[in-house]
Image (cartoon, rainbow, N blue to C red; front, side, top):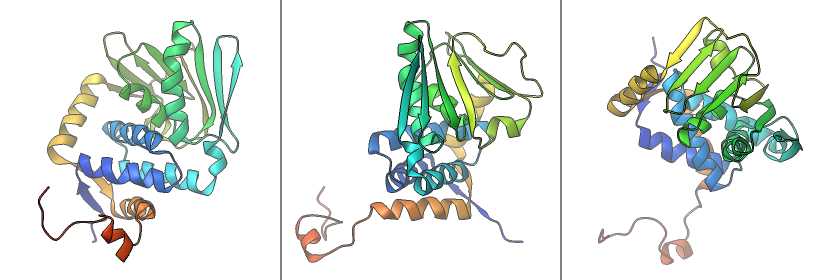
Length: 238
């Protein structure tokens, strides 16, 4: 039986996924934010190569999903894409605008967002900020003390690809708390430590897809590029 996985380091994920996102059409700053969210989401049991490739392939196939419109309804800000909303851009938008909305007692929302876990991960990456993140059958609560509680009907609801509407506010929108699957800050911290110590297990084919998008960032070498300093030199004096 063929083993269809390999182990990669966090640095490899950071390097290749960021540049793969640029290859799929994201600005470098957005690509960096997306990659941090992918790495954080791996703590929840999701394959970072699989989710990164899925998000980037969708953006590559539907560039309109990265062209956002923001609608203001009172103190709420709602984000939409021209063809659904890409998680690559949606997660960054929600995390950037949440603090502004919270200061005004408002909320932020994304409609038809793919891979909603990436949005929750983007919020987690920017640092402790009280928030309740909800999408169908999932509630993620960020406490003032940095605590995180993730409640879902099941793992599929938490890790699913959507698209769904997702909201971020101070109080829950839905009264009923999803039950059946839960992750705490302790679970996430243990997974983070394991990732540092042992690396991350990724699907071989998905990783190859990420690397293929990364290669779009490479420029074919030429005599002119070598003369201008591109690539490695013959003598390492750096």
